[in-house]
Amino acid sequence: MDYPTAVRKQRVTLIRGDGIGPEITAAVEEIFDAAAVPIEWEEHFAGLECLHRFGTPLPEETLEAIVRTRVALKGPTTTPIGGGHKSINVTIRKALDLFANVRPARSLPGVRTRFENVDLIVLRENIEDTYGGIEHWQTPDVVQQLRIITRPGSDAFLRFAFELARSQGRRRITCVHKANIHKMTDGLFRERFYTIAAEYPELHADDILIDNLCMQLVVRPEAFDVLVLPNLFGDIVSDLCAGLVGGLGVAPGGNIGHGRAVFEAVHGSAPDIAGKGIANPTALLLSAVQMLHFLSLHRHAQRIEEALRLTLAAGIRTRDLGGNASTREFTRAIISNLRPLDFAEEPTLPPAPEPAPQPVSSTPDAPWQLRGMDLFVRSPEGLPQLPEKLGKLQLVMISNRGTKVYPGITPPILLVDWYRCRYLAEEALTHAELAAALAELTAAGVEWMHVEKLHHVNGTALYSKAQGEE
Image (cartoon, rainbow, N blue to C red; front, side):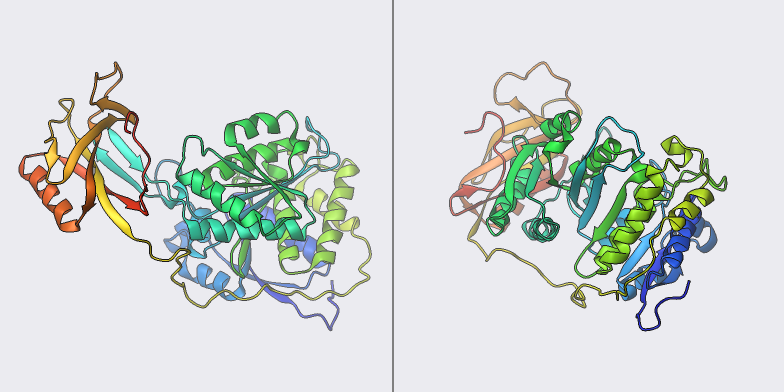
């Protein structure tokens, strides 16, 4: 279809992906062309097929294209389980600092579910948490993963969340966490949520424990409006909310950072049905609608979503939604439901991001005092034999899998060969004193795996208290 001659087109990186990816991206292209959306596609590659063809699942040229165009639409890509290459989705999000994952969950006409009139937005922090991928084998029996929550990262994500809620006329925003157990990581996330909430008095801000939220979502999802979550919880809850409205086949997703974004279908590549002409393009189409809103093409977005909803309301659905329409038939039906184009609208990108990574610290330097260490020791023979004193340091606690086993009676629990041994000092330590203590332990034959330094600032301990520790 011809575009209005006076309308400028926006170049968008297109990644077709694996499995059914090429089929559903072709459907979106056809609908956008029929709707005269001012988009010019620039195709690049990523995924398992890309790995076979080019020797890498994510070529540098693809990342460079997204940096240059600042917006991409991506079909599903295959991620091996338990080995192989890293998730392409996670790699792109982290490489481009796309810190906010936006997952609307809205009921669609003609899609039967247990609930009606669901209208939620799940906002997931996209970079930090366990998705930092910092994992280590500590002993032959113990693997460790670090969970990272930062003040600057939380602030960037949460401010985006409040701005989005405000711009969409939402009334309530809920922080989801497990700060009763993860007191420092989720505690920081929750504290930053309420600090930023004070700048948005028109929004009702509250919080809820993740387990309670999951229970309430499957009982009364209409009670919630906008949910903000750390990365792992957000990953799980966003799929739960997709299930409330019909499944991942109708669930859109956008990954947004400062001035750039990648929109994608969040379902898998479904290689078992690839090439059969029965794939459902709804999730990718709704993701593309999100992309149009990002480009300020709001009227184009509304026109395409309206055509989709009219198609579903008429009972034209693909097989995964209980219908019998092929991908082609479903696509043509959406096109036939497009109302006449009676407006002109030009794309506008958000302000460009900073040209290079900028060092960030949200707090001034504080008078940190080194006051001890958590020493992680391998001891296959049982409780490690450690000196009670190491200079200024006093051994105050040993735990195994998070349960205190010293001092006191060792509880009747399964013990592994990995112990956390906490040494604390009554006064500030120097790094040289800590290094000397480690040297003494090494000379004594203690097989220590790693050490975490413990600090105080302004008289407050910046580490979680161990069980039984005063």
